[in-house]
Length: 292
Length: 298
Image (cartoon, rainbow over all chains, first blue to last red):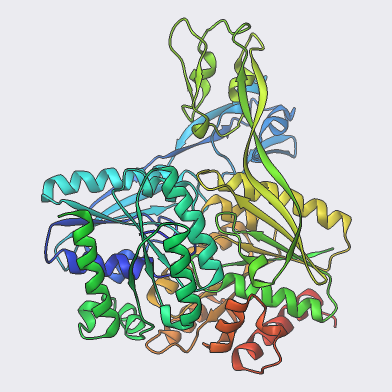
């Protein structure tokens, strides 16, 4: 599940698909929106099975006794992450990419590059009995793509143990590093969009990334009836210009909000709600597409 | 001094860009000279929502090593220092570059004793300038397929700093990406105030805590904007209570409003519409609060 734009309904779709499909086959869900991981909330929480710290990045560390404040590091750093203040080089961890260029130019050998915990992975068993892996990025970190890859790796290990044949990955919004890591190796991408010009533009950018990595894409148009004219235009454009098929239109249904507030998926909270009916037809389509 | 304001939110799709463009339009209408920056480099959309015209675009380039095969010895020290594993070295031959992995840090060039690594460049995105009436826009855009959003966000901030030096701006408003990653930090760096846009769901609440933690680590004052405050089934009270317990000001609650959505699809700030609706009023109130914060005396 991906979408260039945020807040289009990825997590609602991912949690509902996981809930519906686990009744038919074995699966593991992965929350790859490591900045703002909410999938487990939408699924009603879970019992913790395992937690792993991930050192996906490195940071420059200055030995104050050796630093003479010459500033060679500052003028080398392309990220603006190291600055000489009060005669001593200071590293801004939020900006440091750990590339090591500063340590190479330091004439006094005052800088070392050290591993840094960028996030944690948690495996939980939901009350529906399937396992969800959640990645949590330490605030302000980079290399979230590596954390996503580690989350997917942990999910594959779990999948072996559980005998699962499907991974459902809820990606971050955007098209950058964590999204690329979410898409890489995927059999299929479900793009979730809304009938708005901003969502259209971001869908186009997402499809470009998916094409780049040779992953087929299908579209879920959420809240289609918010603007039926625009929805029709967007669907035609997606079909003819992007060659992306429409998997399902989801209605505007406040049962979806009530479901979130109750930490249940809409099909679980109210199977008869319009949104639940549409999500079940999506689950049928997905089952066909992935061929399980 | 230009007042620097960020609009952020942790969770995606809460209404950051809507708040940013409406605030820009409202403050501009009140006589403030406004610079609007779009730091959501993965999916920049301010220009669509404020109907801006692009005036100029320039590429964001990063360093890319160009290996001079005649000068290369080949010793392999460049491949050894590359922490992104973008250079592959096999005994007896110059290294091979995997362009997609290269972050442009120049470590390879620094370490090469033979001057065999020359400077080449690679375009990973663009910085656009645009204009919407009196409002100046600066937009960062990452090319699809590229991973390094923080570099584009940083280049945008440097460009914004230059523009602020040139123009006599009263306020700079920067719209950030969703999330907490370092492209968001780059956008937030050095701002005086952050508006955190959230929604009344457990997801909004969870991500609100995460972004408030980040802002407090960065030492940035935060105000919460509760968007779609009255959606049926929402958890408005829980959000308000959480903010109260943390001592965070809820600057405004924006009710759900069909007109706001229509203006969004039209690509025009609701503030500019002549229809008076509760959401429009809420956005006006927010502009007044921000105005009072910028100019405490007036």
